[in-house]
Amino acid sequence: MNENLIQQLIDSGTLKTPEIIEAFRAIDRADFVPEDKKDEAYRNVPLPIGFGQTISQPETVAMMLELLQPKKGEKIVDVGSGSGWQSALLAHIVGENGKIFSIEIIPELRQFGSKNISKYGFLDDGRIESLSLNAESGLPEEAPFDKIIAAASANFIPQEWKKELKVGGRIVMPVKESIILVEKKAENEFRETEYPGFLFVPFIPED
Image 1: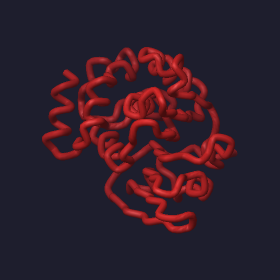
Image 2: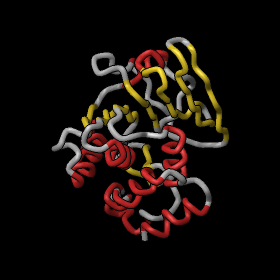
Image 3: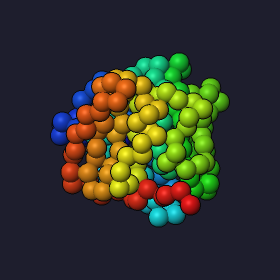
């Protein structure tokens, strides 16, 4: 039951922001897991979605969205979108005047994610743009962005992402075994906060 999972995340203090809680209620995780995992959709664990990738643990997604603090009308990049669940959560939060660039380098997973997202009409209304490319060098033609979030772990945060972020914007990304929050204070001034103790699938580097 989705509501039990959400209540668990609220009780643990992970989910706090009303708009993020509302997105978790509106966007059902069961719509984003493979058919053979439907009965596990509401467990607070990562689940395999093929190609060595996972749909992240709900608690981790909740924590990262709370750090990101997405707002209505924002333009956000979601890197390593996999199942499409996080992109759909973000699309619900940013609303019809916002835009999510959902990036997945594995074509078959991008197709799986797009099929899942389409259940909510976010591709049809243009709220989500689904792209199959390597995000390491950024999206210069669409920049600047309010926020950038990634679901795969790298050894560093790409410099291009920092350049493409608006002043006041945030990046939330796993680096090695920590989640890093980057806040852009001025054009060349960044504040980084580290939250250690996490395990993510690795970022797929550019060839």
